[in-house]
Length: 326
Ligand code: PBG
Image 1 (cartoon, helix red, strand yellow):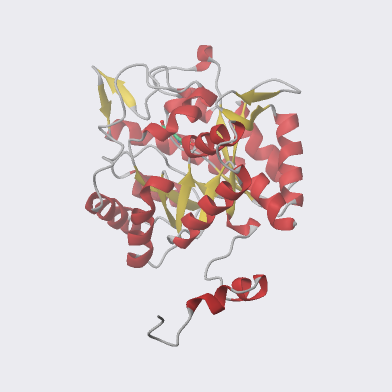
Image 2 (cartoon, helix red, strand yellow):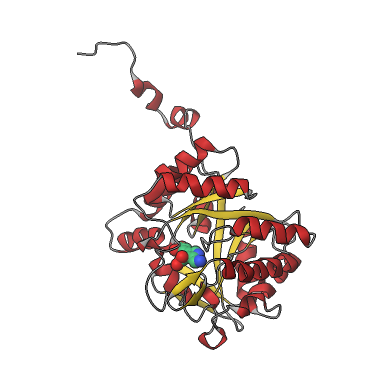
């Protein structure tokens, strides 16, 4: 027997009403599309653990950016795959203006001035140690690393980057980079800080893509412990005070509570990184016929937005934008 005349099912009775009362919607404007870059020409290499995601040489990269722009995706986050021979302890390839990464920024901005280019700031893709900071006697040095991150950020800003994205988790890097950018006249360049970046097993496929896995140990002395929420509030307070324009939570799916806490606590935009392992899980299950890939993808993205993310870095950007166009 129904004890109350309120029947919630009435608001679910048709597609029209369901759409009318939807509290959360997705659009291509929500997506930031991560792209992997390699040296060479006419290359498009699929990443084994990320079906549908490729490493692009500069020529094929521009085609991918163009196709994405046609689907309404306008922000791109670039990651470099650097040959082992160019890696060193100081990640010096990261500020080489003739290197593939800074060239990619310049070429995208030249061909698509309306595209928004976000960078990655961390030593690991360029480091012979595979760590996000300078390694000395098995330790990751914090303050010495800031100088490298600064050089890298400044070079990216000079190349035309719109948003600098420090993903390294060194203490004090947002303020350090902000000051350096400002002193050099780049007051208009934004910082999207990887504020709450956890030491996660979900980065595995990304490290395959860039061949950037740590050569020894793990990243637990700088990335956060998955057990902690309050620590995210400390990181957020620091990043906010140091001048971050956006604060990111990474990974997304296993950390929806962290996204919500930051969204409720801060007035600046909160973003989330729907990481490589989250992509791979859905792709693998869909390939086996164990999940409906498209539906699981859209539900995952919607849940990240519902949790409070204003934008989502996701390898699904293009696929999701295509579905949204239908
Ligand atoms: C490294 C970096 C990582 C990712 C983005 N920047 C991996 C790591 O910390 O080892 C992971 C992204 C993904 O898994 O999709 N600075």
